[in-house]
Amino acid sequence: MAFLESEIELATKRIRESLWLTVFTGAGISVESGIPPFRGQGGVWNQYNPEVLEISYFRAHPKESWKVIRDVFFEKFRLAKPNDAHTILATWEQRGLVKALITQNIDNLHHRAGSQKVIEYHGNSRCLRCLACDRTYTVDSVSLVTLPPACSSCGGLLKPDFVFFGEAIPPDALRESFQMMERTDCLIVIGTTGEVYPAADLPRLAKTNGAFILEINPEPSAFTFSLTDLYLPLSASIALAQIEERLQKGI
Image 1 (cartoon, rainbow, N blue to C red):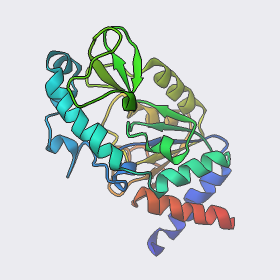
Image 2 (image 1 turned 30 degrees about the horizontal axis):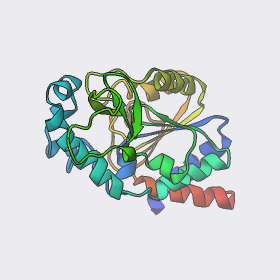
Image 3 (image 1 turned 180 degrees about the vertical axis):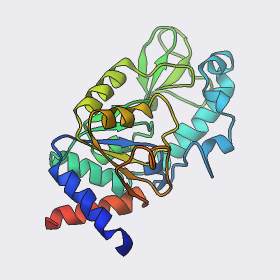
């Protein structure tokens, strides 16, 4: 850790001095909670065919899609708990340091850690939505024993309320994310490959508007050598714990 001492101190300084600190998270922040990334070594798409999350395939083969959805998103995700990185970010929000958190993740771990100002860019796995009448349900209120689950009002097909391939980003999330990128003066990018669009455009927009980009990622991303101002090659929990220690000490 000593070789990163100056980098961590600079990161702490930029965070402390920021007027509008925004955080942008990807799958990497949840790996320490036991949730595998979608891409790369050990990724979900190395085990399952990603076409199950294509909206056209889902409509045509809902039972086949739901088998994977239930296994990955509603059985494995339930076992995961927020890690130290999620908790520290929630604490920073409570102290007024973090103004907004934009996440590509649908695992609900930021919410469970206590963060309130969360923009869920790709939706969430807490709710299901009827494709026929648009009624929404909490996932806990719907049985997933028989697949695919059906709407109790109209009998229509229920779909998880997160973005499938071929679907648009929720308008409110899109609008709010752009507003944050226009306003932020320091953006912490955590655990994202920078390869998923249009989400990957957000740090670029922040940079265009003059934001300082702090990236925390064990491995370099598409942002590291072209966009990032300061790169910490650490896991999210280790990096944020080091910064938090210095914030507490006033270093």
